[in-house]
Amino acid sequence: NFYRSYAEIRRSLIELKDRCNELHPGTCSLERIGRTFEGRRLFVLKIAKNKSPDSSKKTAVWLDAGIHAREWVSPATALYIADQLINVGLPASLSNANQSSLTVTEAAEIVERHEIMMLILYNPDGYEYSRLRNRMWRKNREVNGMRRYCRGVDLNRNYGYRWGGGAGSSGFPCADNFRGPAAFSAAETSAVRRYLESRKSRLLMFVSLHSFGQYLLIPYGYQKNTYSKTHHEKMMYAATLAVYKMFAINDRFYALGTGSDMLYEANGGSDDWAHGSLGVPYSFTVELPDEGDYGFLLPGYLVPSVGREAMRGLGSLLSSARRLE
Ligand code: 0X9
Ligand code: ZN
Image (cartoon, rainbow, N blue to C red; front, side, top):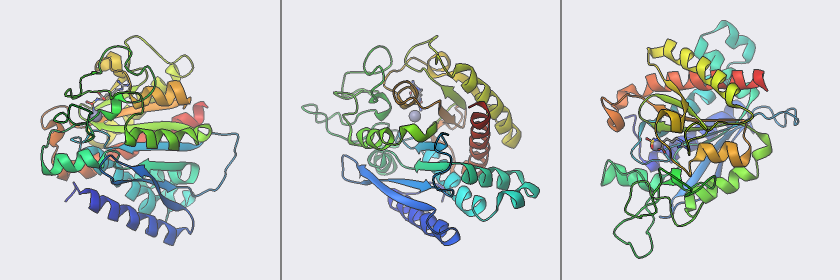
């Protein structure tokens, strides 16, 4: 069973955290960063093997998954990555790993060089609603004022960079891309904002996992032909290399470019905010498989193969970012 419930994911996170600290005491923690509208806890799994490395260098990585309820492969992939980082990356030291398989090297190198913060299930209210009531639910489950029959805010339209400014988000509570009454109005996004703002000076990379379509997207998503002034070429370079490395795993190709150029203009997205407001140098949104055959209904048995290529992609993005900074 590759698609787990909120309760099962929470269990897995506790097990992973305990396993991690068995292997390397004090390396992992499970932080409660806030609660959802319906009161579920939001957990960030933190893996930090090398305490306070060179503080002049940014080494922290943020990864979130499951911001959109129906994109089930996203949290499943994030959990696969967390499992690999801990069960494969931690036991192998970097020198052992070098003689071993590619995936072992990848995982070992990531935990060796980076502090990793993972919000594996961003939108558990929506996720449970998608599992139990309406498979195609996208937003969170908050009640929108008077519009009691149209619940939910699209959390990826609720971020503060160019919030509500132009195309791709709606002011109508019944819309699937409803941006909410104000930037960071949602309990979930405001918890993440608080968490990231106090850690922004350490953040090298921001990654958000979605599905579907097989895209590796960079800022800016709010408007076409709009690019990072400082890191456009660097992000394009890192993404290009990562896409080829990922193709080598399962022959699946990810198209790359900005969210607006590749898909559509949409303001209030997390990737734009991470780069444009927080100043995280490398910011990516990943649209995991497939290209539309199954769409959101990707069969669970494909999760490990998606996990392997996502792991490879993350490793490649990080190694590029390290070299480019
Ligand atoms: O529309 C989205 O939020 C993302 N696609 S999805 O089909 N998973 O909903 C793409 C977001 C790209 N980034 C920005 N527009 N900022
Ligand atoms: Zn999405």
